[in-house]
Length: 251
Image (cartoon, rainbow, N blue to C red; front, side, top):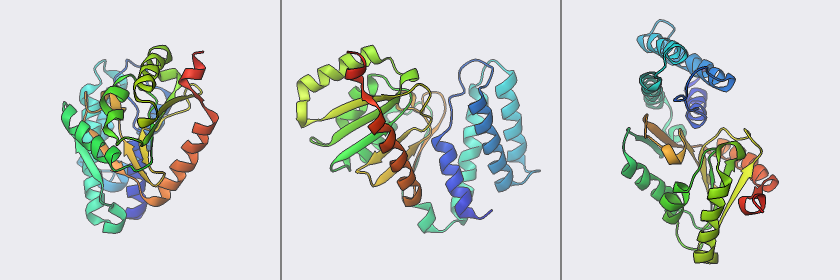
């Protein structure tokens, strides 16, 4: 498998990384993600490599221990080393200019990184995150420039729509069209990605949800290439069009 394909698969893997901190058993989506991740680690470091052995041990720890935090940290660290290894051998055109690693317990770092992304928008930002709360508005939506439309797409299963709709109403009452904002919910369990699409042109893949980013384990933000960006835009603009505003949902 060539480095370009491996790099794209790794970026997709980081974008779809599930939360592992809840109690066992693992879900089918978590098992599938781990299987894909293990296959890539084996491809990059070799079946008999130390990293591959550690990765397999961490998978077992996730399944059979009550505290998942150490295993989650180890998995994230191995995947970050895999990313660095592949980027080192890949073409600069493939690697791209945007990749950020956020250590555990670095709320200011994630604030600065997201500010850089949102403040570069001229017209529109679409934030896709299955698990959001009011902090997405209070901490992040204000980072965009005035008149830039902020759209937030979340999952009905992962969002407390009643409390969030109240916050959105207050936002719209104060800011109006000066800071246009809308939140829509998909059908339950329809979302897995966490990403930000800027001006329908650039996509940034987030390894964790914004409200808990790098709180328990390191996080990554990676800019997708144009081919993946177009796929993401097509998929999530479609879901946006099919979804209703959270204000309509609670009326």
